[in-house]
Length: 164
Image 1 (cartoon, rainbow, N blue to C red):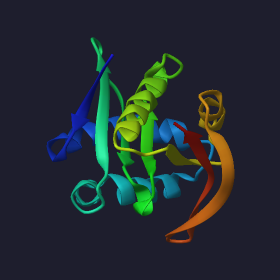
Image 2 (image 1 turned 90 degrees about the horizontal axis):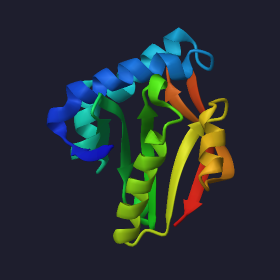
Image 3 (image 1 turned 45 degrees about the vertical axis):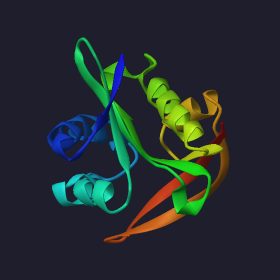
């Protein structure tokens, strides 16, 4: 597997991967209306550009000889602390359980350490089966939060942290 940096020119690829992951990931957790609302909020061209240009998010892609397998985004020094926040990490359903997610987290962890960050953190929906994956690779559930994202919707998340 190879991990590469993604940039503004990779919007269509990130968007396509998200289209293949999101419905499968959230179909038993969120309503179709909330999935559609959140997808537009997070994966429109405007949102993608803003995440990179204004919010300091960095995107990575992972691929093998068969093609692209997933993507992640992260932010170093989140809220001016020595923490790297993983904002997104998604792996195609057919490649889950094959080390793809772990490889991206290992890459982000190495970058975070190199930049002097002591922890990585992420939010995960409380009903997402990925919670167990994160716990298995060393993340600890440090709390939960409900984030109002508008239109009457909440993101109901666990806050997970891993010390590097």
